[in-house]
Length: 551
Image 1 (tube, rainbow, N blue to C red):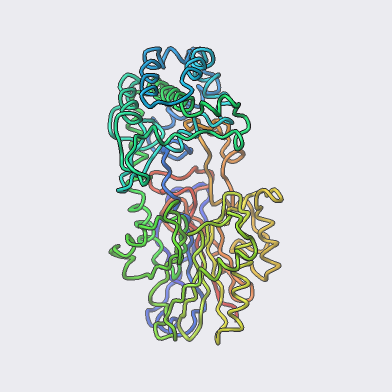
Image 2 (cartoon, rainbow, N blue to C red):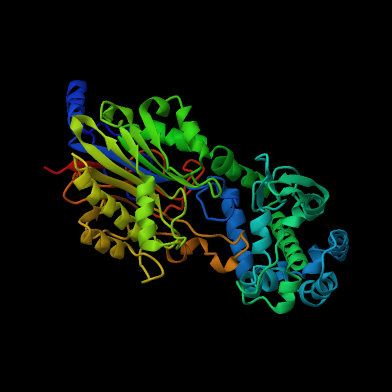
């Protein structure tokens, strides 16, 4: 492929990456595409599944109220002072009586023991130092488990309903004060019935026992009464958040709404706008963590639909709704090839992976998409897109499975396909053997297979493609990081790569592999900037490069 002119965009940056423009005639471009492309423009982006909690991770926000609220919450956790009032001062005896009555109407067991615990263990606790910061509440999952199952729920008819809490996209009422929030809360849990896949039920019926076998910090008594006890704890947790946010800034709901809009209701539009405005010079675009609906949204897009074919896994992930996709530019495909231009081979990769890993659970349905694509001049590409597990432990086995398939295809096919693999490897700056994949460990495994990352044979682990961390507005404070601890305690890693056979392609040396965390085009990357932002709706940077075919 003859190099094309990259998008003209030059935002203020901390350390801009270089992107050199090139110009060629349309005749030269057409000639290049008539035979196997000497080079390919490629991009890869984990667009990130929608996060239910808009406040869970630090982000870059233009509204000064955001920093006031988030830094204020961090300050309260560090040194709560006079704000560290007893639970009963905000979650009052009257509120407890109302909650108890509702739980009694459900016929739940263990209510007397739960009441005893409320009076002896919870109501006199200080809201920050002894409740939010209590490591036992975290290790026992007394607030985080009920949050997980009730935060954002999809009904049988695909209606998304949200618990009245600051840490989701709830928009069905005013939570500006505890007094306004509490009736909404009781109604959500106990008053309404919804149609779930298992049948009509109230939200409170979704609360599940917390098993001691999985969470050994839970006592036998707490396991026995874990349904009403966790119902109490998540109510206190949400009450504390509403109270503290109102104290920090009464306009906190406006800030929350702006985040929910940018990273929720407008996320897909922003994602497709970035791809269509900045990356349509790419021949291949690899996407990870895409909802299944994105395929139809691309097919209906005014720009992308006419330019790209979408390759999806043969078995989609409809439960987590996180799927890897490959966008192939139509004008590089050879539609006259025997068997068609595209042969989906995802299942072949999965079969080889299962032979390596068995039922490990490291790689789920939808995590990988793969296909053989015929291009100009009778050449073929083996394309793959992959999203690794959190610790990256499935990444090297997946690469090995793809390598095995590639070797088989070299003997079975008349033309040996060339590999282009875009991935979120979930590789870490510093690995832990058997626990977390390191960038160096990935590079060593690739070299053994005759492959190389787009970051080179010895990748610089500081070429970060993620840069964010959990805030203090989420139910597991043990995982929170201060604003100035993002790099040390957060997710700041070189996770995203292109993988090729070293004998097939090399990254264009002049251009290199570029990052983008602004949505303004290749190389438009701001160092030390937390993302997502209101304009860039993912916690992964886009990476792009030109792959030059070796002769």
